[in-house]
Length: 195
Image (cartoon, rainbow, N blue to C red; front, side, top):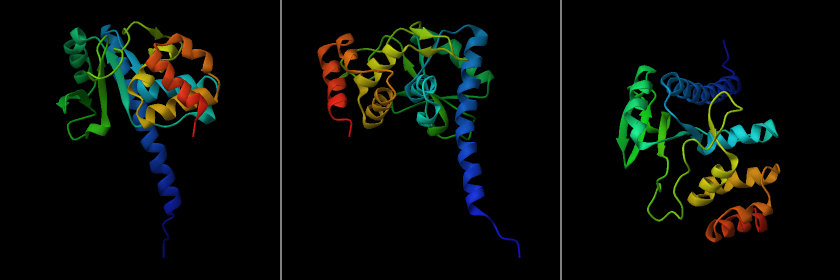
């Protein structure tokens, strides 16, 4: 009788899941670069890109692919992403491009608009799409702008990303001076109490 090794199947699925997100990110950014649409990778993938420069073992996998665009570039980006197999959808006020017609919202590229507040109660708007670092195979938001975005949204996952950046020394308490008082207080809170 043939036995199934569920540990091997589980491991393979974990690897496939991470690879699908990575492939989605690279396909989307390649499509935008091909047509010259300015963009920046933000969110958890941007954190992973920055963390990997210091400590690959500290990289936290995330299923999200978040891309910063100018609102006026949405149509051109949509055409480029459609050609790469993505399907536009707007749901719950979020612009996204599903990874194929049968994909779910979690299998999408989520769009964040440059120079706008993601939510009206946020303290600061998102950075400019040209505030990027080009030392990776895609345009990633600068570290300071990424930290500002994470401090602005400050959900639990954002706090964890900030703690990761603190743990590996990419940022420290001195960074509080770079931000307005409300954001600086949030960073100080994480420095004082990372648990």
